[in-house]
Image (cartoon, rainbow, N blue to C red; front, side, top):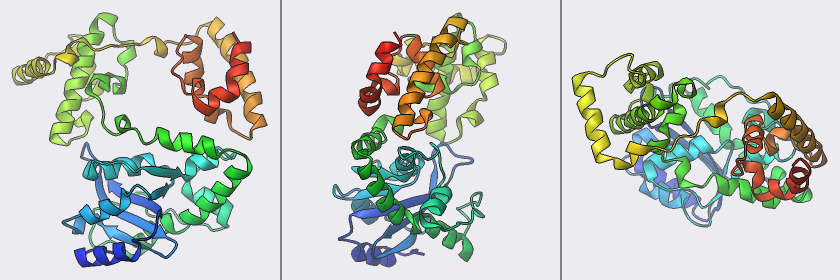
Length: 345
């Protein structure tokens, strides 16, 4: 495991010409808002190693390598890894291949695990013994380091096999589109005016209380980010709703801070809120949804896809209610489904 600056520089020198980087991370996110990055595992065709982020003072050289324009990140279920790295680097990779997404485009379950796809492709069974380990622990057990390295050991092999299958099925363009959708900055920088969407029970509040509830959610998000604490540690959802419904009152200090926040963030004073999407489906909508599902299922079967890859149940209901921003109204999905969508009108 790399724990000194010299070791890091030596490793980076050894892989300086490599552009295919199998990457995984281990992080802790229990008592903080932002993930605490602990390890970065990297494998290339010439070797692999585990970088102890907590032991290093300067991660600049590592980031310079990882974010080179010609470097392809090969990751399984990449979003949290990208986020954990972005919190420290402020950067996003330029090229990405997510093996979980690739597998889903080839008929495997939509959220297939790295262990499961590795067993299918490589006939190798990987243990899951350290999935709940506190990765800030030092020294790390030798078996935990081996477990972490196993998470990248077979990534390159999986990548090449999946890529070849995608090419055979003419789905490489689909994969490129899916990867690009994960390289949007808004995915990794939470917006305060959308924080209300994370409040459990928000849709059951009276409409007249929505605006105050959304403002409280924005304030909570701001406080959580500023203090690096989980948002529910700052204010639990049920408390937030109670304040919005005027069933409970903020303390004088909290009320003053909240008022100051609203003054300093005028955009939060009138948040756009759409709750209709959370209403239960009517009988007519259920019938329309069933028809649409059947049409999309038939198309999915033609292309060896799970219907969930094409359209989730929630997105179908949104579409029926007039929302054309749903995922299957864009890109390769729309190209495949346009006829079915027209027939369902």
